[in-house]
Image (tube, rainbow over all chains, first blue to last red):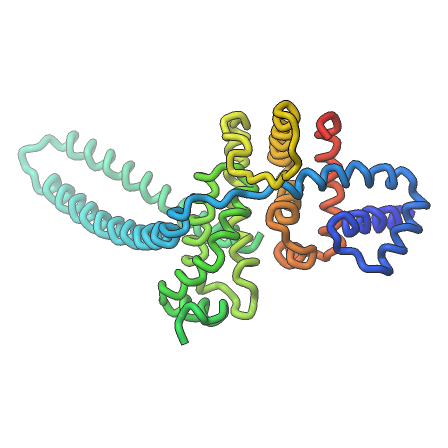
Length: 150
Length: 188
């Protein structure tokens, strides 16, 4: 009974959208006689269809299509540029930190307590950066396919 | 043979080898369809343009994982729909008001019937109500309405894109339309 009603709903849609075969049309007639409540819905759907089939999207400015691929190309290139920039910045940052730590370590005129304080601050910053990098790597590994697979 | 004349599979194969020009041909082949799908989902020209382009960039970055033999647009569509759904969810969280979107300005109405100015105004109001009701549907309901009514895809094409049987497409259409009809009970 439930399956027949669902089948009737499906065939009502097929009729509305002009995707019904002759045999399905006959089946629909039989089912509609069986379920008069669905028969009443048909007219509502027809009215709705009448309105929606008049609604189409406007063509945007031709410029949109002319620059469409150009914009994508720029974004693709920019992705590579950002990656190269990040690698370069990472190398410079690491070198800067190394020389700073070395300089501090070798400074004889600085009190030990300040040296220790600076090392602890630096250690905290490095740990924070590593934590963020680890989180990003985890998300990249686990969610990079989400747009494709869902 | 010119690159524009190659079929999708050949273009994808070339793209996988790093040929950006081949990907450009694919983009130009599907950009209109992509834009209109996004427009149906998000209801804004700028967002539709941005999301459809972003989806192409993501598709390019993942193209090496594309299995040759499958349909490009079906695969690309999964990326695009998720981007659109993400934006819609963000809007919901930000209590995005529909009135901020210029209603129906990107719709072309095929209504040849002539009437008095007040009747024309009423009809315009009706189209605006329908569009608003479509935008207020749930994600999956909106998706099926957009693909059928605004993209004019056949049941078979929708089933392929959504990876479900044709019967499911018809059932989803029924429930989406029923909800729309209920929303528009006083307008229709």
